[in-house]
Length: 320
Image (cartoon, rainbow, N blue to C red; front, side):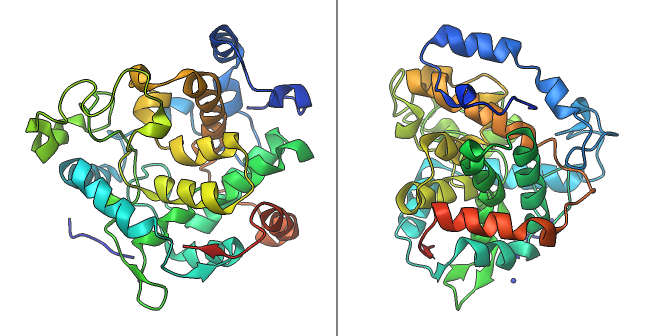
């Protein structure tokens, strides 16, 4: 395929916002939270005709060929050195200056090639995700979650070629899709795992062992994840917003499926990753994944709310 470049229903109570401080608490939370119920909740935000097992279906899917080609390119090309070069390129935040609100509208042109569940534009998907989060967690104490859900894919601007803004049009395999650690052995929990065998790091003794360049329980914040829109926006929010730690976890790890869904890489996690990051990432993914229906919210009905909340958490224009 030619490479394309684009020109839980939970109670709204403050007690739920208290961070878990014991591993046992996390285990209890995960065991007691019915994610199937959340996913099958019948509302405009969640497709009532699509079963949970039908999401992320890479086999019986009309987009299978395109999605598989995407992951083949990603797995063969995203190396440890590639990630370091992309971090050097983008984490200077010297491309352009634009508000979050304006970037949401600018990115309405992008459709994610790696996603087997939707062909909506990024603005449409952003609204779906945000309104699903807002419906389940309507309290003001969770307005940070609503904003996080709305902006979570804005890093995909890297896929756009726009000389005026300073973006070169990265191939989508270098900006979207599931993410994974580099610098250590690739996990079999990754989709289309077989294509990693053509990645140069597969045979590099520095990177092909269980821990690679890392150590046990080093903490996810200290590892390099495959370069993606998640990592880009996470670093923007970490440096230029008032969003809380829970929101940063959602932004960075929502595409880290071999971890939060596959259960792998736990040996790299510290206590904070297990007690906090995993919990909030799992909650967020019920909105990001299972809201992919074609029953869309009306932008004009919620624009004022989100514009005000964005200004609260991103008081200044963002340096991209």
